[in-house]
Length: 92
Image (cartoon, rainbow, N blue to C red; front, side):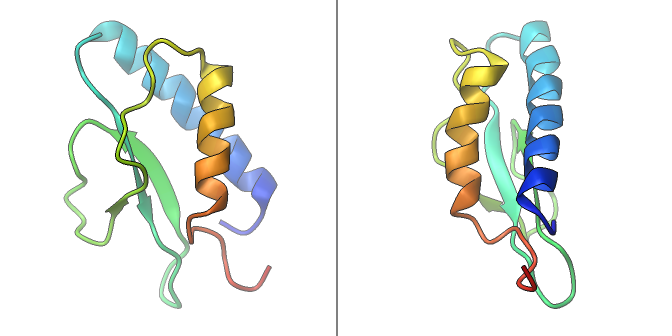
């Protein structure tokens, strides 16, 4: 990911997908996982119930996405978290 705007667009999309999946099964807990940027690849993130198969992914926050908050409220929470994670290219 190269720009903060790109991160925000991706976050909005990920949270929209989370909301759809969460509505299908209210008892599941979704967590933020991220892939740090390295020289070999750009960073990224996703919300999943279980840790991704790729061992390079790390847990981004030890709390599940808050089911009692809207997409916009969770967007604000996770924007603050993603700002601190090494997911953006070092060239910025």
